[in-house]
Image (cartoon, rainbow, N blue to C red; front, top):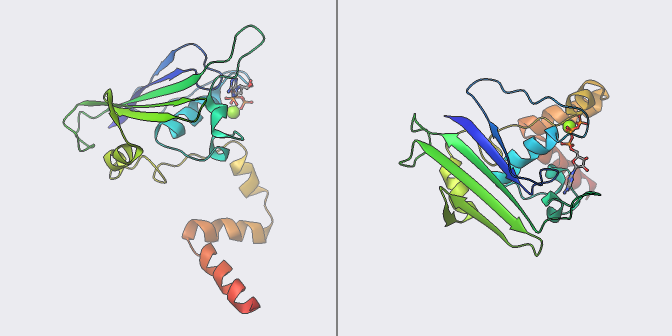
Length: 180
Ligand code: ATP
Ligand code: MG
């Protein structure tokens, strides 16, 4: 299983429909500052169901819709389609190629499709649940995140490790209990 292509339409800086073809192995996206490299990564997180505006580097969910530039009017919807090669049958669906589409409108309405058929977010999550991608399963390391870890003070670094190990919530609960 590998990501085969990604099409962005009205998503962030991608006003016109843009398709990136991906091959198995490592893909690099290069370009000048502000050219939309991180927006491509945001699009992958978004089409897989990301619900948090902050995770998408925006203030509100509407910020994923092309907001217009000096020469181009804003758009009313954003749409992203991720096509996954499923020739090894890793996804539990009888197709060798699976396309997931997410669309959203300025009024907040949103929709998902699997291979062009309307579905719920839950269906997308279930499809991906054993595949290693999808909510909380793939890992996106954001710009500056590595620096933040390397430059952190020992106690901050300990918090990162505790969070990764899943013990931070227990420590917080313990501290709260001791304060009472
Ligand atoms: P860097 O190398 O600095 O990390 P980058 O290639 O990752 O840059 P992005 O962060 O992907 O760049 O793109 C930033 C650009 O996307 C900015 O110019 C910003 O104005 C534009 N942008 C973000 N959201 C929208 C939107 N909703 N509508 C139009 N443009 C947007
Ligand atoms: Mg970037």
